[in-house]
Image 1 (cartoon, rainbow, N blue to C red):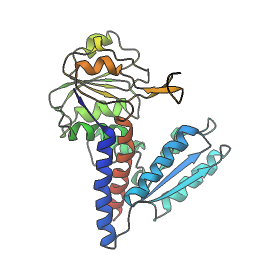
Image 2: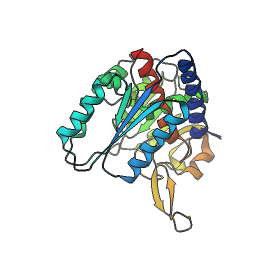
Image 3: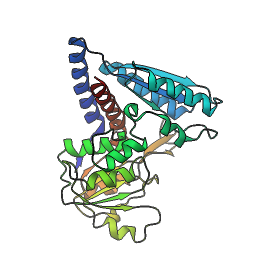
Image 4: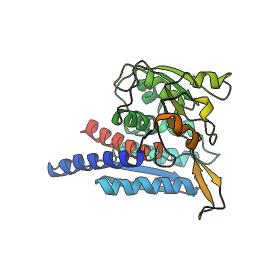
Length: 291
């Protein structure tokens, strides 16, 4: 069993980007500038955004954190997004989700200019991704592709089963892996909570991508020997034996499934760290395109 180490791989990617940024500086070029907008005081969102800011500092990016109050109106938020769209100093920006209930998330996603949409959520970028045109691929699917590539996991001709059909992970993964690309050319089955005989389908899979959001859903009896497993889920489970009072688990019952796997991602330390690394890679790409 080989562990797909997202923590180490993301660190390698950041080091590679840092070298590119240093070269840009040496040539007198403008370095990439990433902005993040956060509305309210959601603890998990604040932690995630702060990690992005620290990552920018590490690799030499400029960064801007825009903190807005929970009670901001939708119109005020859209005005702020428009300011970022027209600010030539900023190459790419993200609006941290989830947003307060009185704000329409889809309207906000639509308001971000596609050329600065380093999250890859705008319909223009999603459409380009589906057509296999140059675009921003959303960070989590992009990170999964990168992990499979760097560990030389063969996807061509393989049967991939994706569990979960979210617009952020499941659906784009099913499209990307079926495309004619280096990490692709697979036969993909997209499954979800309404899929019947799911176990029969996953037992046929050479690669399983679990992105359902149900802790330890995928068990050893659902996979064949030699499978590759990508675990996208992360959930806090109460655990009195732990100092923090909880432990983090994925959508895969790791201890039992890893015994049958050729490759598998851990939780934490698998797909999660790759997300920030690929957001930074998208921001570098945005700067290069603007240049």
